[in-house]
Length: 109
Image (cartoon, rainbow, N blue to C red; front, top):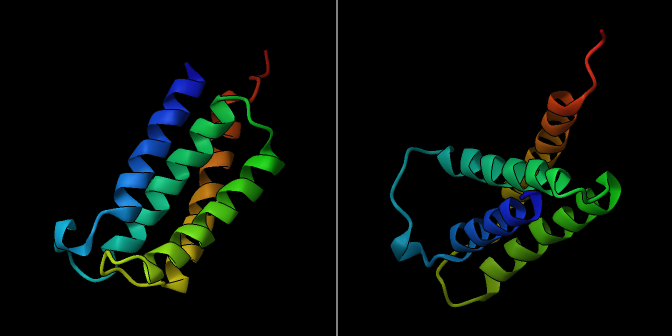
């Protein structure tokens, strides 16, 4: 079940990150950073649920964050590279991994 959820989260991230700007709904300034944070938190949490070890998961999602921003800047989808999106992505990964750890930590008896 964890792998399925991680796969679905990855598909959602691909749509969110590579949708042409004409398909992106307008929103107040900064909302896009919250979307980046949430998408990568979802990837971090579901990646851990899929039992991907923390270090490879964090490294892989960081590479994905940077790569997706670079692609947004060069693909003809009218999107831009934004370093603050990468920062939000990396914070989201950390949040997702930490959230998974907190929710799955053994409880004292």
